[in-house]
Length: 147
Image (cartoon, rainbow, N blue to C red; front, side, top):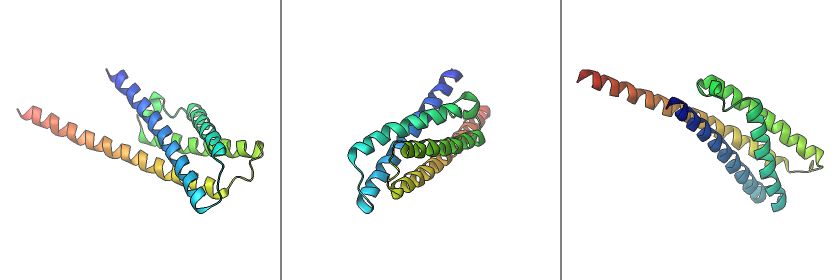
């Protein structure tokens, strides 16, 4: 049963991270089109694929969702920041190699700014839920022992 729970947690982390990444991508596209230079919709769709592929690759290389990483918050944070750095290097390298060097800087800055903030909030929300769960668990054990 414990193995099933860990696999579910790993899957939820992976899906929530990809959702956060895509939300940040959409928000930065919207902000860039509204306040900066407009980005072609086809380039945006291409960036969705590139950003998701770069995230899956970087998460796989740093074993972000492995069983050994999931158990300790410090390991999760370290692997997350490494993944974000590798993701930015891969994405920027792709843009330079495919002659999209004229890509708006405000788009990239807003994307990685939103990504860092959202992952920071996400990781600390996990701590809060874990602490609440542990407190409730301790209260339930005490009440069972008193009966």
